[in-house]
Image 1 (tube, rainbow, N blue to C red):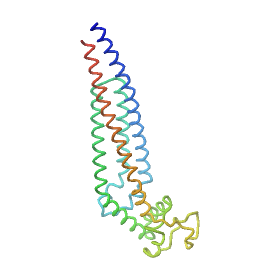
Image 2: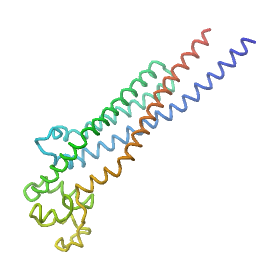
Image 3: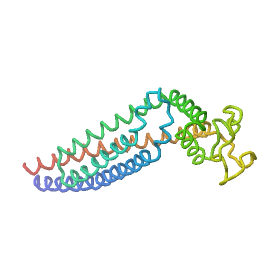
Image 4: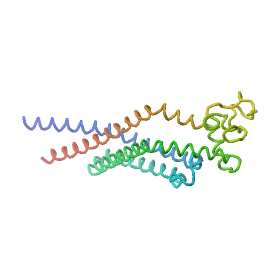
Length: 250
């Protein structure tokens, strides 16, 4: 009878290990897929998004990071995709040492994300001020610097905005004519206000951030709980595999 109960317990433990392996493999695949998405974002920042970062003042500390921001993001995405791929292999083979290392990596990544979130929230006012000054300087140098012109045109065309707070900033704040990138349609007459976009670029970005705060917070919280679930699942799987090995030895 004891042997029968012991055999039944081993079968249940084996089923539990198999179920956790399937769940963790799905989790690992999502981590790998998330890493690939981050790589694509990094490529966009490197080839296109750096134009937005390049308008930051030379005197601001963030300027030294802007040329390499895309490389930082791509590196993080590659590391995350590699971790997810290796985790799939570790989960499939049931290597407990690698599983614990994977859980530790997820823990470090979770703590890093929390620290970056706190830092971003704390420096939000500074970032708003830097963005406002940088956008104003780029618009003031619109007719002087080709780089500033390209950045401003790209922002106004992409976001369908014009000026800082409104299209009138070009005339009253910068004493310049409204650029063609403010047009609602190609090759319009910018002297006719009906043809240009009314919202300002700074107010458009800030309003988007303010209205998306709750959504960003909920997404961040969901990601944190998802990673915490992966950490717990990985540790449980490694523990069950070790327990199964000890029962087989007994």
